Length: 349
Ligand code: 13P
Image (cartoon, rainbow, N blue to C red; front, top):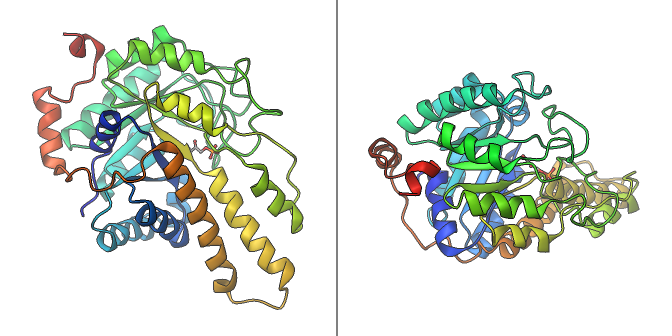
């Protein structure tokens, strides 16, 4: 199956009332782990690469691996997404490679660190939307600023510093026409999100619900949504790791989000932890081993298990065969004719 438009994948998820995990990749084993899980659970899936991942894997290697995944798994809809694009040029280069979706994270300036102004964010995102939609490519924007740093991208700090203002989210959706919107509700990238099980004082699900009520046609995206399960932390630490105890986003909060318009759920840290735990275990318990396959195979299996669990928990399991991919050229027509327009002034009519 050719790579699928992320917009189609999310529209289908909205129809079915489920969320779709967007899993970060840097190498072949991670892509294989995701595909193992997608086959096992019969799930459509979003595979995403950060700028750091694209640099690490030399872009073309990564993209060819995704194409291989699509070729080897003709029954699984796969959208390939640029995670946290920092500029128009980054998004353009992803589209040139064949990504079917891009995130223009205009919440930060091009350095990927300094918060931008609202107007700067609107301007660069609008430019990416015009360019991408003409080519049938989906666009995710971000309003508010997430906490933490991922692959060198992020303002740092806690997730509470720049919580999304619902009025701004509505204005942003209207002025940019994005397909999907990442909002800041207290989550942050990385393992260290919360010091205890999060409640409403640090994880603002009420803000998410308020935004969904006002923007029912814009797919919401939860970033920083690893659950950082204690079992995964414990395996890393049992075999020589040094992680401080921490809390992620509980699955039931993500499921509450999914009942309130969240269609894309970003997960990276949980998979990193699963792979690292499995690798540490082999190297710690069998120090005579030196063939990378001896630790990469268990690492791949550990990640596949986490991904399969998330696919089931987010509800995407069983939905791979629900629809046929719409060619990207037809999606471009849908944008041109206004059929796929999500701006609140248009959808309210
Ligand atoms: P985690 O660090 O919680 O896995 O978040 C990943 C993410 O949001 C990628 O954009």
